[in-house]
Length: 89
Image: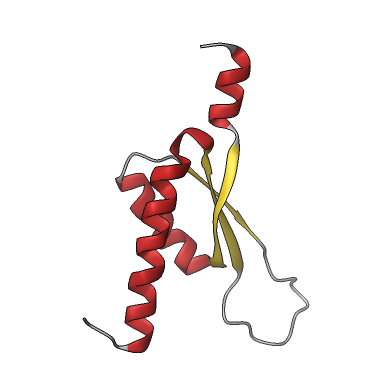
């Protein structure tokens, strides 16, 4: 492989944006499927006196794993939606 091909294959691509808890769960699922991940998390400022529902986080994967990761993320969203609506069908 050439250096340019290696660089493209390893370039990070955003596959998910949500709460830190959801991102951590998805990271675990992706890594169980041999997909390396990077999580970038927004932290609340220490002087924020209003409680928040959770920090926002983004999950990135390498381009070489993008298609497989997208399929897993789609299934993750589907399962989360079922969980939130109580639909077990």
